[in-house]
Image (cartoon, rainbow, N blue to C red; front, side, top):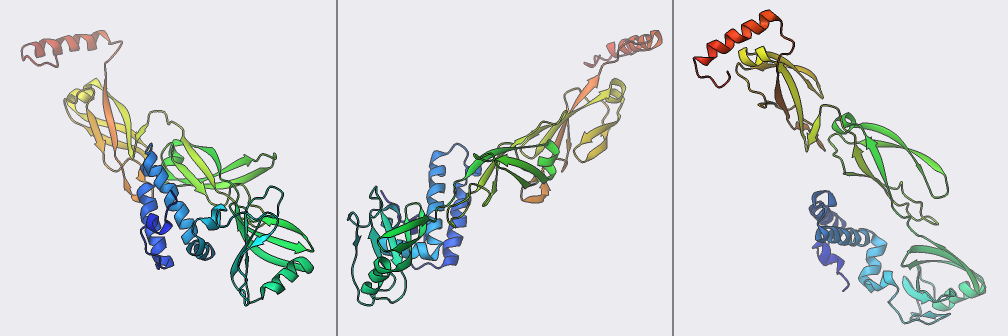
Length: 338
């Protein structure tokens, strides 16, 4: 069934442009694919909301929709009359609509004449001399020029969207930056684009470059370019959301007696205090040393460091003796560390 675009956005038919835009932003955020991964219902609602906004946010499209509904865009407003026009003559015809089936395959076109011309004058201009008018098909607006009984059509068709991938380093995804990419179209032409990588972006997210897709025809808008982000790994670092996970190896003595350890973070090395008796596998939290939230760089995740205690190898005879003495001292205490 056809959707009522006003109902889709939840606004009245008298809503102004500001109310329509506000309603669209709220619903687009609610059903955006980034927040509803794998949710088919949300994906369909997101498409509906975008289509409704595309129509109602455009003054000319909204006017057509209010007058003809979906028929203004899908070619079902009038019965087919091959080779001619159907409509109503209004004496002082202005902002009216006639539909033609003049092309060989009989497809639907809707033409809108603006101004206060009488219909006889319009037809005279079209078939007797030359007339220029604006129309709409299911593919977009068009300009057409008649000369005698012949006319050339130029469809205002929007370009299609393009999907591709972009590879970024772990640090670029964490801190953001600019990256230049090259894309080759179906005709072999290469274009170079500078892409702004937002700080905090995650693997699998999509960057949209408006108007960088396939070009439109005869003045139609270009499509968009959607780049799926692939974030490379960083040795020693693992990311989960905005948090970062690493490990640190501390000497046996430092773990037993306490000490300090140098820990690598994406912001540089930090020195961390190791408590006496620290066990292998225990974790240290470095608050705020994770990755910034995309769109809110002042909020960052944490870094969680797993401690690995290094067991000494190739002990000298003296060190080996001392370790045995240590073992004997511990045996009387019942300590599980011994």
